[in-house]
Length: 368
Ligand code: SF4
Image (cartoon, rainbow, N blue to C red):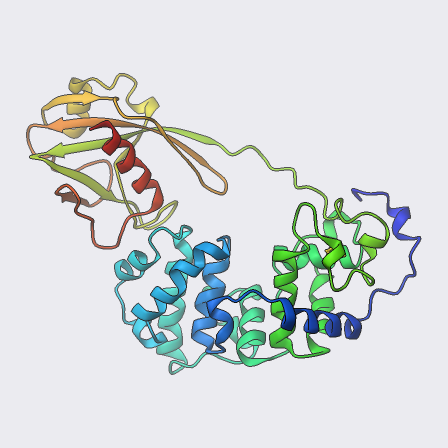
């Protein structure tokens, strides 16, 4: 169902703004107004690949802190491919969405093992690399190799939905078939490398989700949503389903002054990352020393929910964690559930720790 009055769009000529005009205006605007970002200075395909993966679902300001350091640690595809996964996750530590790091690592191994370490130039060939999807293939092919391949993410889909005044909600997202040939035509009408980045930049800085600054927009005269006064109504706001909330105990088990962290399973949230052992609160209704001792299989002298609760919001899930400070009098054989690392105060496990663990340790620190 259209979210805005579709008849308004009919007030405009049927013809969409021409790719040539859009390309010309976007190209000029980008060369005058682009932000000075570190990855803009390179066309090295590997470096572009790393930046594109990092930028997915992560703010530019955050990526700026990581991109350079990551490339210093893994300066080539070969170096990344030969690294241990724990080393890659450590370099990614704090960036979130760790699945991206594992896929990038797997992709690098594939490129080295199967493609002699050389990334393909064309988007359709890049799609053969594990972890490279349609968007990343288009971004890499156009930015690194100047191929006229479209790259449509949420930002670009929003820009195109507005320029073309797409009122059909089903045609507004990045997955909608209509955007890809439109963007392909625009990037082919000039320098693909520049135009791909110009569309992304316009979406990030001018044609923003809320309150687009149309007065400063280089394609204001061509934009149909602007002409119809619909810029703030296209695309339609997403109805987000409420995320399920997991209510958990985060066990801060100490034995002889060392804290036990567990490595999470290889699949699922925070896969292979270090975290405090998490136990659903329904599985441990009364967290007395006796009950916690039974759970751990060793005597426990203290079990106290004295630290502040910690909330962590994932894309589709929320964890509400109550730290439970536990002192074990014997070393537990295992902790729920995974490999255990016993760490002295201030020590960090190999592979780094995700933000959620940082938050829990901070809450515990404040309490002690
Ligand atoms: Fe977006 Fe406004 Fe520019 Fe149209 S004129 S592309 S709505 S910023």
